[in-house]
Length: 598
Image (cartoon, rainbow, N blue to C red; front, side, top):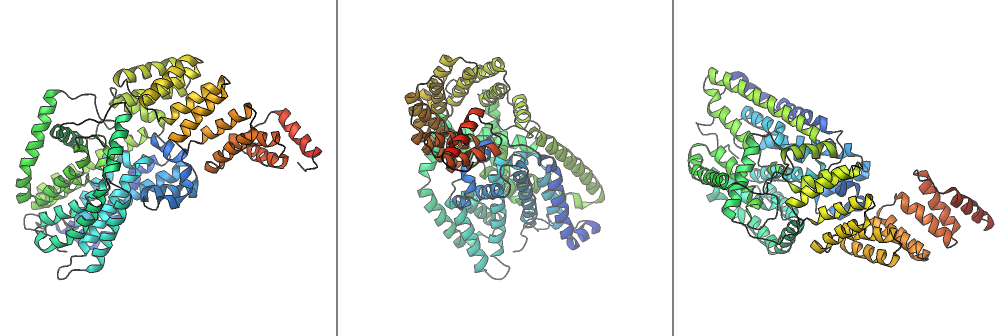
């Protein structure tokens, strides 16, 4: 389609050298963008799994079955990573970096809808190196936002392809509609905003009179989706509330929108203090008043931008649009999330491209000043990105960095407690858990982790009390049921242990460890056949579970299935498990007595 932002105020002739390079060397521009995108994230490739990565990948048996994720492209990619490289982090990180490279190329063509090639290159370069993207790129669990951006960028370009200068092209339009329909089938997130994106573009460009009928099928698909969005919306709100034991509550949408917009704009413009958790327990009234004033100021500025700087108007409107979930009076997501800004951070690129075309090309002095300023900004952003990548290196570095930025966040305090627990520094762990519970006394997960710490300190009564407190807040917390079962198992209360494990599995049917420990309880209570069934269920989810193989070898021995016992004995032994020498001797003698070769 024609570049509608090529009005005289936007397309002042650039210097001959830059214009010539822009016209004749798009390949080298794209190559430079890919190189920059890869280089700033190269030091994230050897990072470990962090935070949600552990449960999403390391402990997720469903990744072995890609067919389960046909409607979830992000998890489908995770599954393919798992099939290709197991749970080795490098492949997952490499996939994220390559997705970012793809998005930067798409961002270049997205900007070409508004600007010349040189300006689009500069804007895409800002997008490539901006540290706001580290949460989505350096964190494997941030991948959904990379995939969302890839679909939004590419589908926007496909949609624009349908409208040529002289005729409507049915093929690209149908493809765009099909892509949108596919993305919303398994999601109720940012994909749903695509119709708003194209409508906003058409209204801004003045093409809406010729195109408004093309919106109808997209809106129809969206309407059908929204008919079924109530259930997951409510489930999401309840899930977030239950994490802290609170009830779903209503917030003032004006104050929520003002705080969200201010906070997200702040980290886009000045990405100094980056953290997975930006929320504070409360916002001072004076600060909130200033945020509301900023909101109304930006809203009042939009008509002026629409008239004088349409590209900036579009970018700011997109930024505000893609914060829409955070404006909800019922909390369905964090108010501030760097990963949420991955697509809408194109606003920064639009602003730099606009400044280049509006001012820099007017004369040589402006050009020199702009180039100097641009190079300083790119260098600073690139350096900040590479430093931020180091924060995501492993659990310790990540949570330590989070504590510096968000010391008043209870989830950060609780996670630090868990790290100290894992290191065997139990008293330090208890102090962190106590601080976390002082901030969020109804956080069921923190009570559960406090119980785990007490259990490791052999303070079983305190551990049981902590688990029961967690369950009083969140009765379906599988981890608390499982841990309580472990206490019963240690005390040889096998019936109570089995009951707790059953409740854990009702809450989380994929908790393989509950099957393993149920098998142990059955073995110790004289039911080896039941133990065999439980160990087999664990192995159905995790075929390489060493302890399940070892315990199954013992269970098969007890029921006289010596050949099967030897098979699982070998698999466990080959994986590094070392059996009691007496059991090894007994199994060999039993096989020989039964006439079976060991």
